Length: 208
Image (cartoon, rainbow, N blue to C red):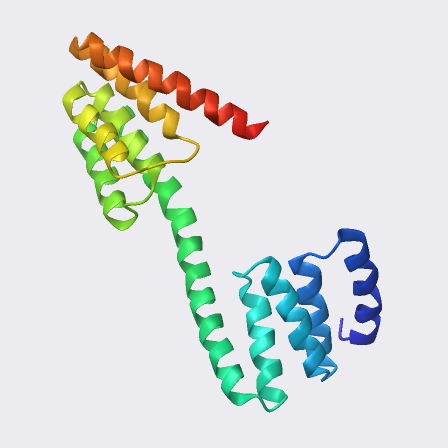
């Protein structure tokens, strides 16, 4: 509200109450920038970036404060970092919208009896976001629902071969166990059932 002095007075207890977080330090940095207290703005922005190295707003404030305080070379370096962080934020925003849309579109097409277009939708999305486990996992699920069990096995096995980890990892083994059972390969089915139970147990232990 263009009352930087009052804002500064509020941010000090905010730091005490939170133990210090990136948002509070960014606020202090921005207030000091507006008050033309540039060294203090840099210090606060540094604190914010220590907590969250991807904080584009704090990086921007730091670059402006460095330029205004006469540290042009450091300011230019910080501006380069800000540009990278901002571009990354834009990419993440687009990704966060595109993947759910692709999944929704694929399953809508599947329910409408358009199996191949559903698969094509996910394959196209995977080309854009090859590191997305949800796209690949759902591709395998749709292949299975269409009776393409060998294709589904390949999709799930490729995820393991390519080192996909994370929350969905145990689901890969669960689906592989089911696909191998359908194909009559009970040895492989039992193996992946065991791996599913092991990875699921490890997942639950991490959450404790």
